[in-house]
Image 1 (cartoon, rainbow, N blue to C red):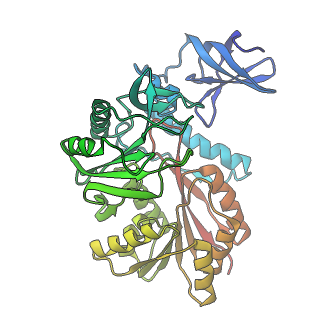
Image 2 (tube, one colour):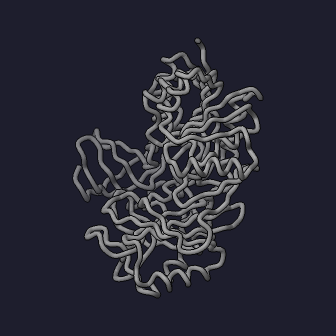
Image 3 (tube, helix red, strand yellow):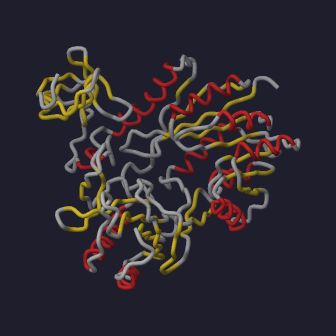
Length: 450
């Protein structure tokens, strides 16, 4: 097999990245934008030892599950790499990811629920972080083509709240009007690296964050005045990121105008959100995710709950009314302040948040004799450490509620908990990110030995 070779392929499966899978003369071929059941004429883009990547030149036989979208930039950039698949099949694909991971781990007896669909399949994101680059001599916003840093200019981001799209385009036009230079990542020069826009579904407040190479730039006063006139914008923040890095946000924020936070809501609990606070992206699906986790946990009025990786308190404050007390742990001190302030904002008196590493804090609590009935954990994609699992077990919880954005690391961690005397019987997938391959999952571990 050679690069640029044209071959006919039958697509038999989808990879976890939502690429079509085919086999050709002993090689596995991953074909972008192809679906199982399709026959395609494909051009080979890259050849490795046992696999290759290809793109469709022509669809000879089309799958009935295909959605013919007009703007396939969404698929090309990975922004919405399942946009060409019918939604019920997206849900099936996500459930199958969990089923396949359990089979690989020899946990075939574990039941997998049907994927909980999202109330909105497009326009659901309450935040957009969009790169700004110069393309053909003009400042553009868009998204990077998959596996590259080539910017594909976009004005419709498909999965993002349309109000955010409107503000993104308005800010782009203001930056062009005042000739503010886009960031050049090769030479680490220019000015605007990213536009980071957050919008509250509950209040309609919009925060605009300009991620900049410098703390200030000559056109900032005029740019700020123009952004202030955009309908719905309640605050402007300059985030200072001087480093040559792929990390989007720097560590310092300057409030240019407006309020330092926006207020959003999960169920009946309000949250003030700072520029760098983590807040679930899908505002309408998040309460459904938390309700599912709370229902599965079967919480009791006397339960003492630990909310690990607590962020600004979204899970713990949603749980608080069902239990005796919530103790939250978060390593980011600003998020801890936000969590305690959010407790006050909602008149919640039985939840308290502390700063520190969860494994260290839980070990200290266990040494002092503190016991937890239930631990809620919603870790980053890399999952939990062995030190965390050991510390969690020391607090003696009867149940551990695990919410995951990466079922692969989740199942690895669940096996470690099983070695510590816990068991689980079901995993429920939740679609927090329609049109993408990502799947959230919830399970409850129960202690089987003391």
